[in-house]
Image (cartoon, rainbow, N blue to C red; front, side):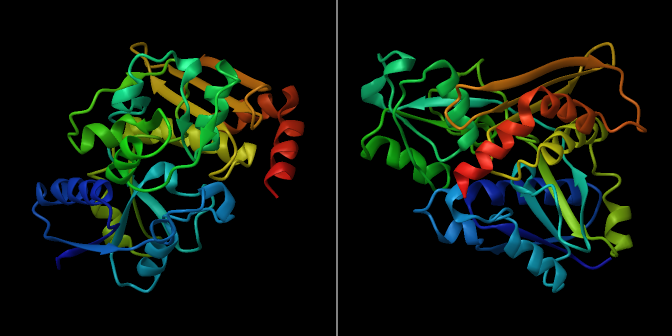
Length: 304
């Protein structure tokens, strides 16, 4: 077979993810060729994502490259992929999830401050709301850019700390101090590398059945169905995390919060999985019936 052309964003983390997919393919004796593409989300580093009014801001340019057959597959952080995919594009594989958590990284001069004293830089509505749920007096400011850019801003600009996905820090092998945050719930599908392809490219799809990690796929489908049912897109403060326990059951935790973190609806369930039921949808419906519908309307009005 010809060399498989892998489309990716051109950030260091995205290139790491593309190389990881390439390594999986090369281990199965397939040739690969990585093609970096600058995404719309990477071109505008000043405006917070929720203000740009576009879902799929990091995936759109790669979708176009796929549909125009400039690349055979595209590699993404799955949490960046909208739940509604463009026509003729589908997720054909996910790699095993490694680090789903959010972590706090402080600047050197803020090491001794208590959590409630920190000025936090994040452009994520989810991270702001979940933090504010516990520390309502917190002052927030926006921050954009790749991991290295944000670390630079952390030392040079006027705030105390920022939040990262642990996956970003570990994958880049960065030797920085970080703190775990038990009060946070990850974004749906956080810490998962996904591969998309054209839905009608049966040869590529067949090839990736060997690469796909089934347990991760089961968990992220629940998380993404939960997100889609709540209609969060990439913007509302929604957390969702599913994992398979040692009894082969699924434990799912989910949360929907108001933008200020004052009103939160949560679920924490353990259940036996089967492939016929849409558990993510069912869990989200419980939240919608428990006041989530009104909360989502309030969030949408606020973001208009």
